[in-house]
Image (cartoon, rainbow, N blue to C red; front, side):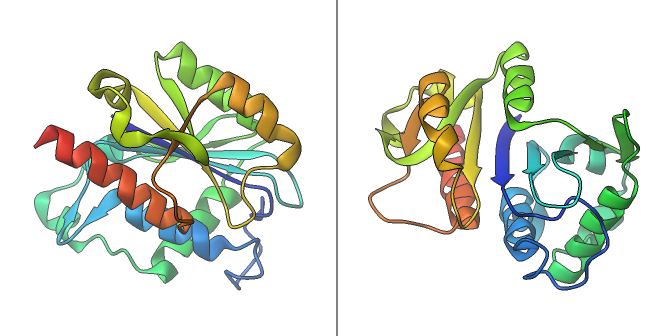
Length: 204
């Protein structure tokens, strides 16, 4: 199972918004979802995406989307009809946020959960599951030098347009293995595509 963790310090933590840009750059979240789960005319069925939002009014919020569970109960026709438009994904995120219940981990759709959990608790849970946490950062080791076994068991952490909080970077670099996708600065969704491609190439 490929695992991504996307952190946003500004993404809204309630569903009462309409403008993606003004909702803490929820447009970036939509792009990350699209690039995590979609191929041309096909959906990836082996991805788990963790969204960690620290924006107002009720941070933090943790959303988990597992395509394996989400797609498993759908027919092939249903899978082919699933859209990847920002409008539909924005509606999906809003429904997830509206369904949050205090003190609960709520399954809103099959394989899609929402709860109140901070970034470090999410990372600790993934570590307990045997995942190796990779922090995507320009100063890290080239991802192409990481072993196949580590890549297979990896969970890849990336930040939004503002990056991960500067005050947390030092701690994260101590707790995670730092890897880089190259010497250029890419959009978060592009980084997800590059990591997916790296794994695809190793599986071919």
